[in-house]
Image 1 (tube, rainbow, N blue to C red):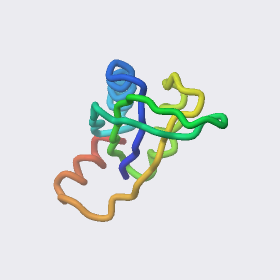
Image 2: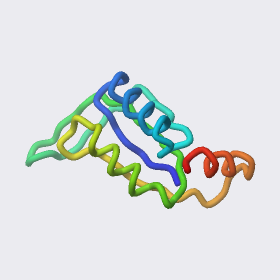
Image 3: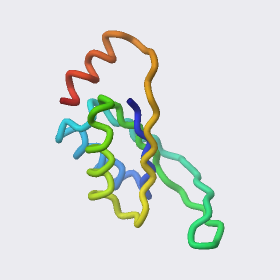
Length: 101
């Protein structure tokens, strides 16, 4: 399972990513800079620079990971989108399972 999370800046993204990995909610979190988000919020179209987090975890941990993101995140409504992983390197996927227990 991969979860996508946006954060307002790299420091916030790194803080959330480190907590998720340290707490074994994710095996790995990539922090990708340079995301430009355009979205509607409270009736207005907004635009912001953000970072994207890609957290890899077991499907069974997705709910706990999302709850932890909401607890750590400064946004009123943080983005947390779960995407199923249907295939990949078997060795890598075994590692994700082992490290997100």
